[in-house]
Image (cartoon, rainbow, N blue to C red; front, side, top):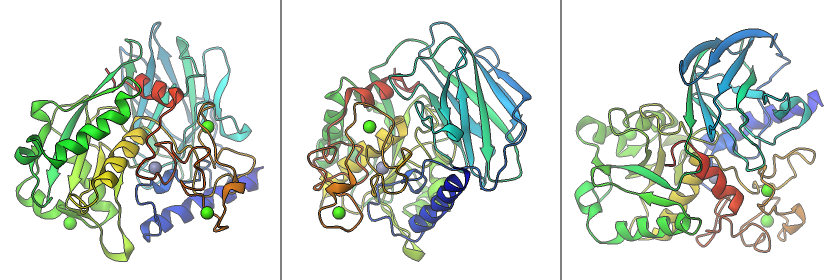
Length: 401
Ligand SMILES: [Ca+2]
Ligand SMILES: [Ca+2]
Ligand SMILES: [Ca+2]
Ligand SMILES: [Zn+2]
C-alpha cells in the first residue's frame, strides 16, 4: 500500500513535468489535478500528528501552525454551510490534508485508508481545502481536525478559515482583467459583440443549474503600463503565478478571470487556460498566486466556443470540481479514485471505452458516459452538462452568494 502510493507521488511529479514540458494536450488542464490525487508523502513522513495546532474559529480566523507535526482544529459554528481553509506557506513543497475528521470522529478524507469522501489532492504553493465538496458530506458543527503531510521537512504555514453561513448560494460575482488581447479591452468588452456573446454562453452553462454569473459594471479592468508589457504574453509558470497577484487591491469576494493575449513560452509551455492548484481556488481572496482563472485569448474571434469551454471548465475547478474522468481513466490507480472524481452522480468512463487504444479517453469515446460533462478531463466544445452534485458543491462554495 505504502509503496503503491509512493509510486503515485512520483507519478504526480512526472505529470507536473509533463505539463511544464507542454505535453498537456488538453491545455485546459491542471497538472497537479491530472490523474494523481494521491501525493504528499514522498518517503514516509508521518510526523507526530498529535501536536496542538491552532484552533481556528470565526472569532479568530487566522492561525499559524507547523505542517509536519501539528493537528489543525477548526471549530465550525452551528448553522455553517461550508468552510474553506486557505493555507499558505508550502512554497515549492507539496502539501496534503491527508486526514480530515468530523466532530463525530468520522474521517471524510483519509489518504492512508483510501477514503476520499471529501477529496483533496496534494499541491504546492497556496492550498485550499473546501468542506464539504461533496453533497454526501455534512458540515457538522463542532471541532473538525486536519492532519497534514508534506514531501519536505516541514514548514510553518498560516491558515485563514472562510465560512459560508447562509446556506447554498446562487450568484457569483466576477472581476474581468484584460491584458494584451488584440482588439479587446475593458471598454470594448462591455459593448455588445463577440466577447459579450462568450460571457452569455458561459452564463448559460451555470444558469442551467440555477447559478447566476454576475459581471458588475466595475468588473471590467485593464492591466496597463509595465504590467501589460510583461503579462500580455505570459511565458512561464512563474509569470502565470504572478499574473494572479495583480488581483490585489480590486474588489474581493469575487472570482477573477484574466484574459491574456497569449500564454506560451520556451520549453513547450502553452496553456489554453488554467485554474492553478487543486480545486478549489482561494474562495474570493485576492492577491495570491492562485487568485483567479487564466484564459488564453489567442483564438478570440476564431474559435470562441473553445474560449467558452475553457472559461466554464476552469471555473468549475476554481469552485471545487475535479475531473469526472481523467485522461487515463482508472488505469493509473485501479484501487483508488485517481481516474475519477469523488461524486456519486457524475458518470465515469471505463477504460474499455478507449476505442482507438491510445490509453487516453476522449470526449467522443466517452459520449455514453461523461464525455458530455463540463468537467471531463478534455471537454469537447459541447461538453456542457453539469450534474446536481457538481452544482451543489459550487453553490456551497463561500464565494457563491
Ligand atoms: Ca511575459
Ligand atoms: Ca463520479
Ligand atoms: Ca482513446
Ligand atoms: Zn480540467
